[in-house]
Image 1: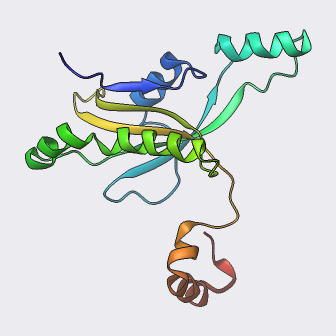
Image 2 (image 1 turned 90 degrees about the horizontal axis):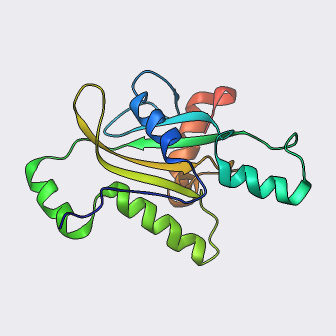
Length: 166
């Protein structure tokens, strides 16, 4: 029996997310410059997400104040080579582990972006399989780079001066 290749948080609409993945290469805005992996920001419309709509209706008995749009981040992982693919069969893909670890952090009340979904071996329109992890965008005041590698940040700030951006 083959393992399920994706999981979607029940609060989100799977069809909306699949549409984002199908358009990953054509839409979205890079969060950081693409390297080994790519992370893009997308604004998605949850108007059709019936669970959220129904919850909001029950609370307020009207739909006008429903916030339909949400910013999400989608990470597209580098394609796996044969050896890496073999090991991922045992320990799970990076996309799946990102999703599972984020859920675990939230269980422990550690603030992290809400995990929305992961998709392994998702076939894009170019017939290439990639793995994706999708999370809510979280506004933050600092990054883990500033905590773990403060000397790198200080050096970057000195180089860029007032143009410095995280």
